[in-house]
Structure formats: structure tokens, C-alpha cells
Image 1: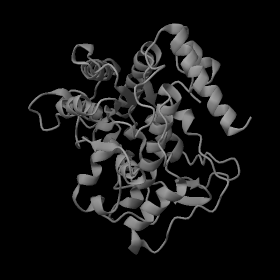
Image 2 (image 1 turned 60 degrees about the vertical axis):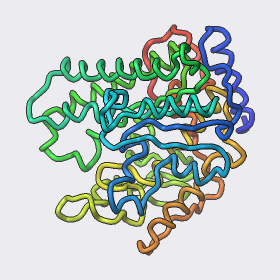
Image 3 (image 1 turned 90 degrees about the vertical axis):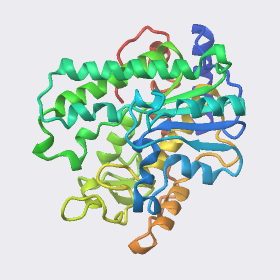
Image 4 (image 1 turned 45 degrees about the vertical axis):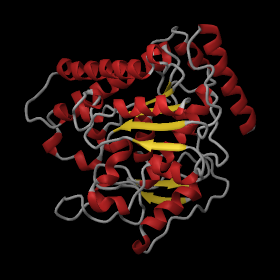
Length: 369
């Protein structure tokens, strides 16, 4: 089946589910991402890490890349480093983002709000020197989920005329499994934190994708696949541990390579351009993630990616190269036939029988691909 046929089938399936179940999401006011506002609520993992001093000159967040790629439209990044699901909506807090998002909705009509929160909620669990039980860690996941419900409800409050906004929710990455957090210093609550993050992600999928028909993207799965050296390319095998192939280009994905010998995160990004520091994904990951968001908008809401379309691998590599000119090694897409299946990181994946059952509420557990 060719790509056009797959695209049509997936779009039809998503629309069919919404029509049959009565869920929102079958129709959206905007036909394209450039028709109205495009706002991101988030933390340093979803767009604000570039505010950290010298790193800003070396990397671009996913929203910055989309803004540069599309000459039309309005792209606003509200993300603040350190934001949690609670502080994003706590008036007076330095991480507060809700009012600015609501202002964008009121002032620009139809459009998109992308929410990427959760990873910072689990920092007190992961980095405490006191052992926590799984029940205690799960309570953090439940609280974070309830905060997300409150945030989405506020954004879509029909009393204020916001029901037409198209919401994309990103689940949480699991930084407990990254190399920079692999030392014994972090072992105490590593497993309970990881399980709690998965619980949080499952709750997001069940409520927002399953019950409400909203777009949920799997940043957890995307990062896990990339760190596993999964090339998402049937023509190129995965390299050694810590190496990824994208369009024939070998890329080092070990976060430790972005650190100084003393363990600090101020070293310039190595030639692969994958990490901003030992903990934050840089230009390459951000560009791929941006395309996952755009694909979710098309698949779930029928909102297309505008005249410029998705970011090409060449576009992402060119951005990374321009920001790191002194590294001496430039990224190059040598596999001209390369494609990346961004739709597999939509929760649940559109167009499959499993997706139809999950959204209809007949299946409660998520199948990992």
C-alpha cells in the first residue's frame, strides 16, 4: 500500500471513530496549522531548554524549527524550564502559562494548543534520598494526571468559547533510563519512578485519546526508540550501543558525550547535534518530535501541516549544522529514500483495529509497538 493510501485510510479511520462514538476531534475549525494560533505549554523538555545560557546558540526547539519552516501562521512558545503540571496553571507562579494560552485562544480564533508536561512532576520522586514505595510514586502520577485534566478543561471551557481549540497532549519521557542518570546515585527510586511515569502516560492515553478523542503523542516511545538505536529505516541496521542511524547518517545518542570530563553539562554539543546537554534533547530530536505533533494534527483532527509541510530530515540536519559550524563534522542525509513513520507515535496509532477498539472504550490496556 502506498503512502497516500495509508494516509487516507488512517484519516478515515480516525473520523469514523469520532463519528461512531460521538467523541470530539472529528472536525476542527482550522484546516491548516497556519490558519490560526499555534501555542505550546511546556517545560525544558518540550521547548524551553534553549533559555539556558550558551545552549541557545547551539540548538532549536521543535516549535522554533516549525516557526522558521513556515512563513505563515503564528507560533508561540510559552514553555518555561522547571514547569510542572501544577505550576503551569498556578496563578502568580513563575511557571504560570495558562493565562497566556487563553489570551492566544481568545485573540486569534481557531488554532492549536500543544501541552508537554509531566517529567518535572517526578523529579521529587527520582532524586530524593529517601526510598519511596510504588504506591507513593503512583500517587504523584495520579496527581499529575488530575492536574492535566484540570488544565485541559480550563483550555476547552465552553463557557469562555474555547471549545474549538485543537489540543495535542504529549506524554512524559522517562529520564530515569538515560545514561546521564545511570549512576548508582539515582538507583534508590529509579524503578518506582519509571513505573509511575508509565502509569501517568497510560492515564493520559485512556482519558484524552480514549475517552475524549484528543490527540496524544508518545514522546516516551519516540525517545526510547531513538536511544535504543532503532533507525526506523529498514535499509540500515542499528549501529553499536549508543548510535542511531537517521537517513544513513550515524548519530551518537549517548548523553554523556555532551558533558565535560567533570560531569558538567556545559560542553558544546558534539558533532552529532543530538543533545543540548546531558539531560535535554537537542535539535535533531526536537525536529523529529515536531513532525510527530504535525502528524497527530493531521491524523486526529484533519489539520494539515501547511504549505511547507513537515520538516524534512534535510531541514532538521541543516538547522543543526548551521548552529554548530565549528564542530567540523556536518550531518548529511545520505539515504534519499528515507521515510520516518511519525504516525506510530500517536496514542493510539490511527488506522489500526486496536486504535478503533481503544478509542471506543473496548480495550483498556495499551499495546506497545
